[in-house]
Length: 234
Image (tube, rainbow, N blue to C red; front, side):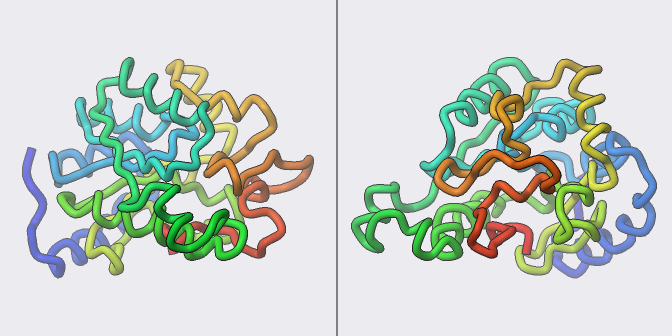
């Protein structure tokens, strides 16, 4: 196992080359490349909607860091999924939190900021803490898939994250929902119980609803607000 180059320029070149070379590679091979290239400077981020990418990564790099962002607004089922993943999988779950508690944020900005200014709420409770949490890594993996929504249709398997100066990996970008379900069934992967209760995508409780028949998987997030992403992947 080697370590990644440390300069941003080297990482950018590496990401762009890998994006071309690994477009057709299997998810596990993509993650094996990440493990071999970055070693402990590679992590997985997980919303604990399911543990598919974490499970895949643990096969490539046992004990891999899995970064979970506790916004303070999660469903109890999401916290339970995180705890179960930490207990039964060969991963190291690292929970990061925003600088302010929900009560502290309410005191500064007023209650229910998520209803009045969801972009600011996401910036404070998701984007900023994740950027701090990723500081010690050269590369990070996400569970983004192209079939989730129109805004994710062109998600690259490996890309240069210029905003964070890191290599961003989406090993299951080319998977479909059927592929996810098949992997879960084959390997007994943990999933959030809410996925069996009408939720196709699980985010913060105040901003997530069940999806209706015919809607895309992301339709239940910030419904009616004209918002489709929290800002992490923009």
